Image 1 (cartoon, rainbow, N blue to C red):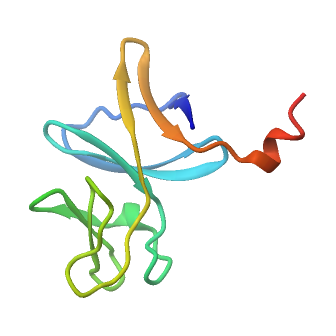
Image 2 (image 1 turned 90 degrees about the vertical axis):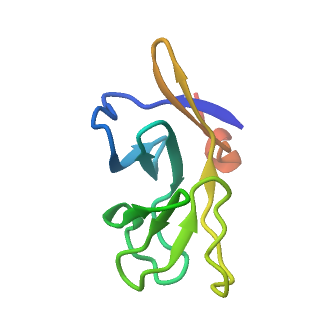
Image 3 (image 1 turned 60 degrees about the horizontal axis):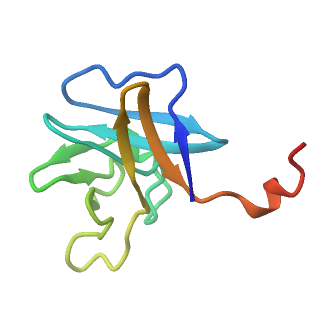
Length: 112
């Protein structure tokens, strides 16, 4: 696992959902009143862009296509869905916001 700084992007709004490309991968960042979450940008149910959804009670993001709900703390889908989204750790540091992603082992073979 490796930490990546979110370059050139800010999560300024009090509450927002943004899709940001980090290390070649699109991540959905969700800022609530007091926390920042990071999750997969695609809904596993229908492949929709989950960053176009919205947040409801209990830290759940709602997919804009079929209204599937996912818990932003653990990625679990709502009862009966039988699916989940990938969740990423986020750290706020003095010099910016960081997200933890697994390294692509194949890509690392060709680094200079």
